Length: 275
Length: 287
Image (cartoon, rainbow over the protein chains, first blue to last red):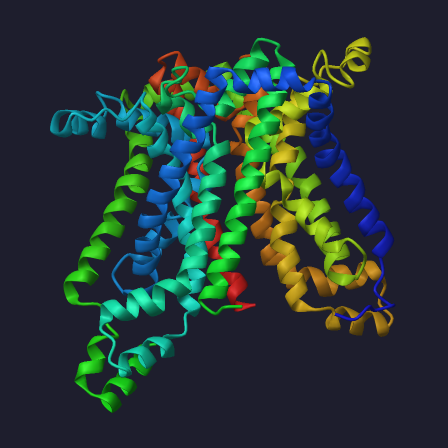
C-alpha cells in the first residue's frame, strides 16, 4: 500500500491507539516485571523450586499437552469430515464447534464436573464399565482442556483443507498412488503445519485455563492443582511476590514453547514446500 | 471439487478414481467419530444445563433467578459489558484505521502487541490489576487514601474485563480493512468529503458486519469472563459477583438450581452469540 497524503486522522488515531494500549495493557503488564525485579535471584529460585510449585507446573503443562494432542486428533477428524463429506445436519454441527469459545468457562466447568462426577451421567458409566474416575483427578483436567481446545484445532485446519488444491491428489493418483499413499504423502504433509498451529493454540490456551478446570480438577496440591489456581492461592494468602514469580515463569515458559512451535512450523512448511 | 474428480476419473480410468475417494467404511466411521464427539462433548453439556436448571420445575427455576443476589449479578454483568464493549470498540476502530490506512515505523510490533492479552492467562490478567491497585500495589496507597476502591470492587472488574476483551474488535477489523484497501475512501476525500463523512458514509458501511462480529465476540467474552474477574472481585455476594461468579458461588454451596439457572442464562447467551455469529458470517460473505 502506498502512503496516501489525503487520508485524514493519522495522528489522532495512532495517538489514541497507543495511549489506550499503554493504559489498559502495557502498564498493567509491566507491573509483573517490576514486581518480580524486587525479588532477589535466590528468593525467586526458592519460590519456583518449591515442590508444590514444581508439581503444579508438571500438572498444568502435562495435562495441557495431552489434551492438545487428543484435541488435535479429534479436531483433525472433525475438520476433515466437515470439509470433505456431505451429510445431513452438517451446518448445525459446524456452528456448534465454536460453543467452547462462546460458553463462559465457569458454565463449562460446572457442566463438565456434573457430567463426569462419579454419580454423574457419564461418570457413573465410566466408573462401572471401566473403573475409571474422571472428575477430581488429573484426567478431569484433561477432559476439560480437550473441550476448550477442540475449536482451536478445527478452526485452524478447516480453511487450509478447504483451500487444499485437489489437483495434487489427482496428480498423485494418476501416478498410481493408493488412497492411503495420497493421504499420508500428499494431503497430510500439507495440512500438518496448520494442525501444529491448532494444537499449539489449544496447548497455550490450556496452560492458562482456569474456569473450566477448577470445578472438575479436585484441586489436590501436588496431584491436580494447576498453576493458575496456585497463583490465586498465593494471592489469597497475600504472598504477592510468590504469585508474581510463578505468573512470570508461566508466561515465559509459554512464550518459549510457542517460539519453539513457530520454529517447528517453519521447518514443516519448508519441508512440505509451502515456503 | 467433485466435478474435477469425475473428469479425471473418466480420463484416467477406474483404477485411479479409487485413490481420490475414501472407502465407504472409512467415510462413515469418520463421520461417526466426529458426530459422536460433537454430540457427547457439545450437545450433551448444553442439554444438561437445562435439565439441571429445571430439575425441580419452573417454580424453583424462577425463584432461583429472582433471588436478589442473582439479580444483582445479572445487573453487574450488564454494567461491565456496557462499559467495556463501547470502549474496546472505539479503540478497535481507531487502531484498525491507523494500522491499515497509514505506513509507519513499528506497525507490525503494534499489531503484535494488540493481540498480547490473548496469550496471557486470565488469572494473570487479574493478578496484574491487583499488583497495580491492591493494598500493596503501585497506586494502592493513593487510592485508599482517597477512599476509592478498585480491587474487590466494580472498577477492578471493569478494568480486568477491558484487558481480557481488548483485542476482539481490532482483530476482526484489521485484516478486513487491509484487504479492502483505501481506494473508495480516497475517491470520496478527493471529491471533497470531510474525514468523518468519509468514515461514516464509505468506511462504516463496508466494515459494518465485521465490526458487529467483533462487538459480538467482545460482548460474549465480557459477560462470560471468569478467571480474571474472579481474581479482582473478592466474591462479595450481591456487590461484586458477576453472573459467572454467581454460578461458581452457588455451585460451591451445593445450590444446584441456583448455579444452573444462572448457567442457563449464560448458555442462552452463548447460543444467541453462535446464531448471530453464523448470521454475520453469512452476511459478511455476501458483501
